Image (cartoon, rainbow, N blue to C red):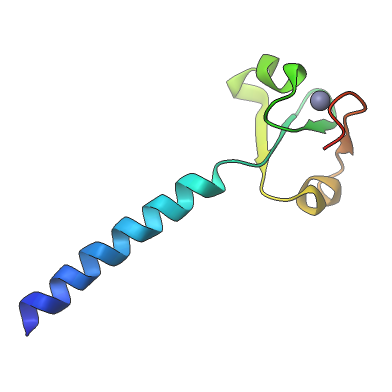
Length: 74
Ligand SMILES: [Zn+2]
């Protein structure tokens, strides 16, 4: 009985890490540009890791003071 509980915990942790991987996708912004982009945007790909900010939703990016990119229209 105890062993089953342990297994369920492992399965749950596994599902959670998959969920956090999915959450890594979203809207990309640079702390130097004040604009946010979709992942596919060329400008997003040029953002340096040290200035990169990732938002899960558009609302989150807008609340943080970022504006939507005019090229990729996130
Ligand atoms: Zn863009």
